[in-house]
Amino acid sequence: MTKISVVMGKKAPALLPKVRKRLNQVGEQIRLARLRRNYTAEIVAERSGMSRDTLRKIEKGEPNVNFGSYASVLHSLGLDKDLDLLANEDSLGRNLEDIKTISRKRARRK
Image 1 (tube, rainbow, N blue to C red):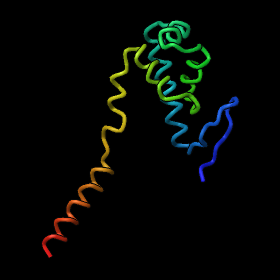
Image 2 (image 1 turned 180 degrees about the vertical axis):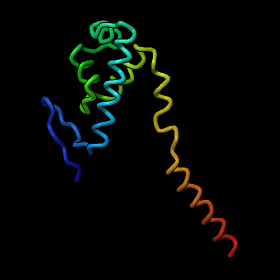
Image 3 (image 1 turned 30 degrees about the vertical axis):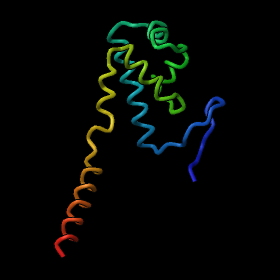
């Protein structure tokens, strides 16, 4: 059973510390990208079609913000190509697929 916590009236999944840390890092990277471009939070929020408060939550890496909002902010910053990198390197999945393929070949040989 998945543990759910309530964050500001919305349900958010309880995250492992490692995942929580990564979300915080993503939020910080988004904030730094905005600052490097000298964009105000108001401008990025407006261009992304969200409130300044939602942008603040994204920059803090809060888990109860929907993925589409993160994608919209990345697009507003010209970083939406980074979305192509998500789950791109699936080494575990490829290894599992290779093991399954090898097992099938051995089964056919018998």
